[in-house]
Length: 463
Image (cartoon, rainbow, N blue to C red; front, top):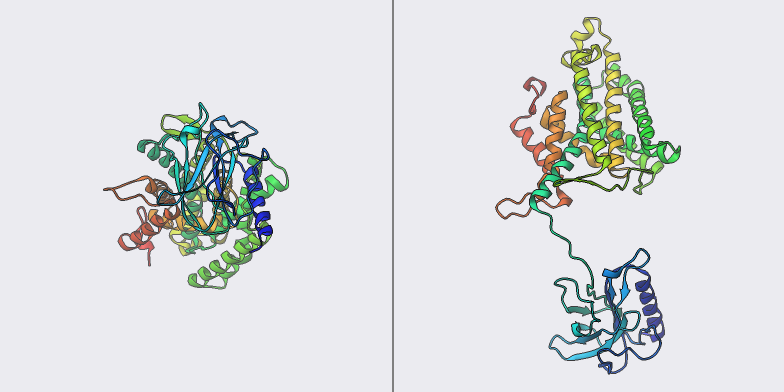
């Protein structure tokens, strides 16, 4: 390999190291010189004030930064005059050097292999020390030409561990928030199933529709987040109305079976998902406000203003909707159509009008769930699809077609998903965050085996 391209590559690596913020970092440095440097502790490397990587294939480059002295414009102060030595695993010295005024040094290595980088703690300046239990020796494997990174933590404050009770309390708050968002979408899904018998696999895309509509009104039209959310809820209700008039209503009047309509929902979900990807893009985006907020601390609970607003709005809407379904004329009509559509029609009730109202209300509630999810997290074209499993698990657990069952099941699923990763039973490690949604799938399977009608459902609804 030619030495000049290697030297240029090494210089580029060093330049990136200087620009990148961080604590202490170490790199390998090639050098064809003698295996051991003659520099001693306290001396500065000879030559220019900024060290240059030697013209060699393998080398170690170290930059020592004291992070305890970082400022708004700087990650910390360089630590000069520190001696570092590269040794073989048996302890034979390979090379040694002293950090310059920029806290940087280079030590050449003749060949790839296993080495040990040792920092002379006695050479650290007065008032400077390694962070906590940070080691003075680092084992490295040199197998690529160029630099090998090594880190020595200086001035980094060790994080305090969070107690088990605090983690549980925080997980319960997150689970309550997630459960209420799921309940909004689950209530919409349960209303549609209860009045039409349709299992709607496109329901997750209705969540995405609400989130993307919020983003459009907020970022595209410049509306405040709350106004954008209200417009998104109205747009979601209108979307449900158009669906029933243009798709589901004609299929019902043609006598299309529920299995065929369920398959249509699968195709409709795929169509909407990739339409969102085409129009919105595959990247994750944020709203103009309510993204990053400082939390309030109340005992073991840390919660932000947007989380408080999410919990309060979701709980209030769920309570009002459930009470309206039990007391208002429209709510009673929806329950009558859900119990027996033929009998409701024979008594003079406009069944199609009631079903259209259900589609408007169900998609509006789901659009609200998408709006709250966009405020709490970020907007992505797959966000509703990823939440669909939890929504189905929630309404199945609570009881398909029941309004209170959807709420109860959603709260249980939300708490299960968030609390499970914090619980250790008999020394068994908790569920990793990456697969915490698996618990919802297990609940879905178990409830179908043990009590398919759900907690608050009626057995005659199944089959």
